[in-house]
Structure formats: C-alpha cells, structure tokens
Length: 230
Image (tube, rainbow, N blue to C red; front, side, top):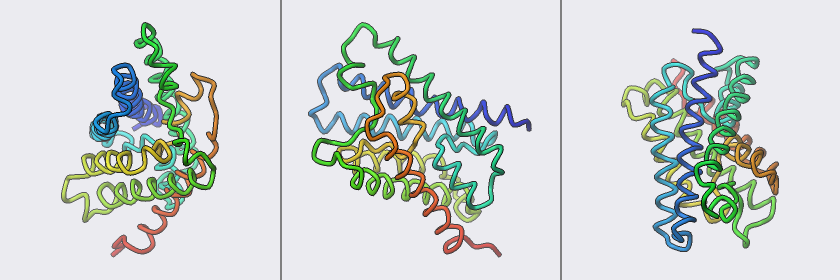
C-alpha cells in the first residue's frame, strides 16, 4: 500500500474526530448547554464515537493513528519509520484544519464560533497555567495511548476485537474527567486545527508537550513492561 493512501486515511480519520468534536462543542454552545453537565457528556460522546468510527474506517489502511501523539509513540517504539511518521502528522493536521474551517462555514449564521472559540481545547480559568495543562494532558494522553497499545498493538488485546471502541471510550472518559481542567485535547492536531483557523495560540505549546510526553511514556511503558514479546 502506498504512503499516500495511508496519509489520506489519516487525514480522513482525523477529520472524523475533529469535525464531530468541534461541531458538538458549537451545538452545545449555540443551545446554551455549556453550563449543564449534559453538555460535557454530549461533547465527550461525540469525540469518543467519532474516534471509534474513524479508527474502524482507517485502521486497516494506516493503523488509524489520527493523532500526532499516537504516531510519535509508534515512532519511539519502532513501529513506524520517521519519514512516514512525519507525513502522518502533516496529514493529521490537514484533516483537523479542514474540519475546523468547514465548521466555521456551517455555523456562520450563529455566534457559536466566537463564543466557543471554535472549540479550541483550553484550560478552565482556575487551571490556566502551563504546569497544570502539561500534567493534565500527560495523564489523559498516557491513558489514551495505553488503551491504543493494549487493544490495537498487543496481540492479546487485538484478539478481543474491541480496540476501536475501547480507544474511543477512553477519549470519552478522559473528556469527562479532564475537560474542565485542560479542555482534554490529548491530540496536538485536534488543538492545532481550530487554532490555525482562529489564530489563537494561547498555551498552544502545552498541548504539544503534554500529549507527546504522555504518549511517549505510555508507549515505552507498554512496550518494555506489559507487552509479551515471546
């Protein structure tokens, strides 16, 4: 299979996640559900379901990374060569950016885009400092990438055939647990896409450092400690 087909799959799969995630935030904002705990549940389930479907659609083509942090975890554990990893990241960002841009068009007749800042993952006011953001994103991404390795890399987990749903559910519970703290990105492309469209890069570097460090730690931990290499 050519690299271009794999990269196209990564762009489409990331589009699934970002379009559903951003749109759900804008819908919640537009309808005034932001102060309702049900609004967070809608956002968490939209991200989780979209990621599950995106992985199911693209997993057989590209592996269904759909996240630069996941790609980097595969890189450091020797599961993808550097040139292809860089291509994956570029196309993941492309998919996220297209999704964000199309959301601005679809919701142009409302004030939701401005009110929600196009769904850019950002910390709550009480948590707006780099240390909290990086630690929070580290923990959330560590859990996500552990689920990726446990269900999609480890042959014992793959035998259960639960990978895509388990990974999506991990994103959903991560958002429920950490959404109010960091915005629960866990995915630099998910953060960068709307940031590029909005031109808002507040704390953006934290949303690369935290997820990448969490992904690398989870990948190395699973690969070196939990994975059965016999």
